[in-house]
Amino acid sequence: MSLVQLIVLALIQGITEFLPISSSGHLALVPALTGWHDQGNLIDVAAHIGTLAAVLMYFRTDTKGLTLAAMGSIGISPARQAVNGTIYSKLFWYLVIATIPTVIIGLAFKATGFDDMIRLPHIIAASSIIFGIILYIADKRGTTHKTIDNMAIKPALLIGIAQILALIPGTSRAGITMTAGRWLGFTRIDAARFSMLLSIPTIFAAGILGLRDIIESENAIIWQDAAIVATLSCITAMAAIHILMKWLEHATMTLFVIYRVLLGIFLFTLICVGII
Image 1 (cartoon, rainbow, N blue to C red):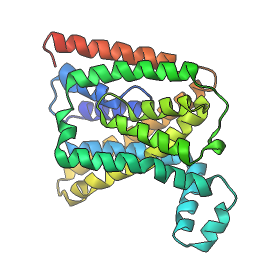
Image 2 (image 1 turned 180 degrees about the horizontal axis):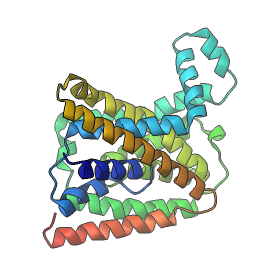
Image 3 (image 1 turned 45 degrees about the horizontal axis):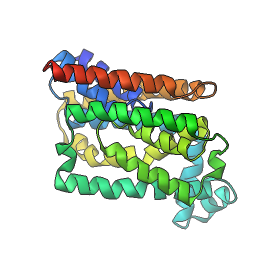
Image 4 (image 1 turned 30 degrees about the horizontal axis):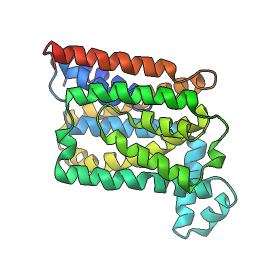
C-alpha cells in the first residue's frame, strides 16, 4: 500500500470518526474516486486504535475518572474511594448501559450477515441525508439546559438505543448519539462529550476484534503501515475533536447538516452515473 493511500485513509478516519458527518460515507468515496483497492481489516483496526488513543488523551481527566470507577466496580477499594461522590462513579455505569444495546444488535447483525447486506452506496447516501436532517431538527428544537452531570439511566439508555442506528452505514455514530443528546435537552458541548466518551467502549471492542490479526501478522510492512495509519489517525482525530468542541461553544450543528446533505447528494450523483 502506498504512503499516499495510507495518509489519505488515516486523515479520513481521523477527521470523520468523531464529527457528525459519517465516516462510512467518506470511505465509500475513496475507492470510487481513486480506484484503490479495499485497504483491508488490518488498516481499519489500526485507524480505530489511533482514534481511540485520541479520545482517551483529549478527555484524559474523564479517562482517569472512568478508569478508577471501572477499577472500583470490580472491588478495588482505593479506586472506589477516589471516585466516590464524583460524577464518574455513575457515569461509568451510564456508558455501560448505553453500550449494551449496540453490542447486542451488532452481534446479531454480524451473525446473520445483515451488516454486509446493507453496506450499499445508496443506503449510505440516503442515511447521510436523512439523519443529517434529523440532527438539524433535534439541534434546533432541543432545549439546552442539561449537562453531563444531569445524565441518568433513562437518557443514557435512550442514547444507547439511538446508537443502534449507527449500524446503518452513513448514519454516523457520533451524529446519531449527538442527535439523541440534543433531543433530550443536553447542551451541544455535553451531548458531544458524552458521545465521545461513549465511543471508547465501542471503538475498543472493534479494535480488540481485529487486533489479533495484526499481532499474528509476521509481515513487517503491514506492521509499518499499521503504525503509520494509527499515528496519523490519532493526530488528526485529536485535531478534529478540539475543533468540534471549540466550534460547539459558539455555534450550532447546521454546518455539519449542510455538509451531510451535500455529501449524500454527491454520492447519489456518483451512483446515477455509474461510478459507484
